Image (cartoon, rainbow, N blue to C red):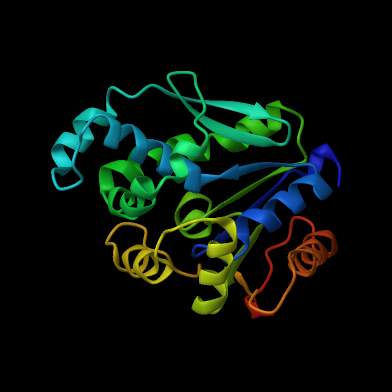
Length: 229
């Protein structure tokens, strides 16, 4: 690929489906700016919890968001959200954040607050000289970049995803988060129409990344047809 063939790649899926790890591999292989939008929602959730704001009062949440200064920073091949010019670390992986992130993420004001911010990363990737952008989350191919050049949707058996989460030392409930993400009224977790579905249950990260790389390299700038791998 050349800089003239800038591409946008979206990767959606539930928790522990493998989207973060494989997206990072593709970022390195193809010189794509990597963005993990889950960290955006986790960072806002952490800030809201620290401020004592309850998800039950959506008006208060919306008002508080008006006062949160967010920005962006690039670290290597990864772009990260900043709050008051600072990036957050392990605190956004705490049990409290795990239990609350899907609740806050279901609030329309929260998703609207991040929509424009997340779309702006394509300009950041261009300005930083990357060959493209790879963004992963739960509504990237359906809402944030529905016209992306390549859209993937990853899934795996619930038991396998729970095992992966346990290996990562995470304590969130896979089943509970799936249910909340799929049932929220605004931008629910769903496979975007036309996206390439990949079952990662029995596949290694490198195998999944190989599948995605093959699609991208063999069809640069084309819209891949829906298929199941």
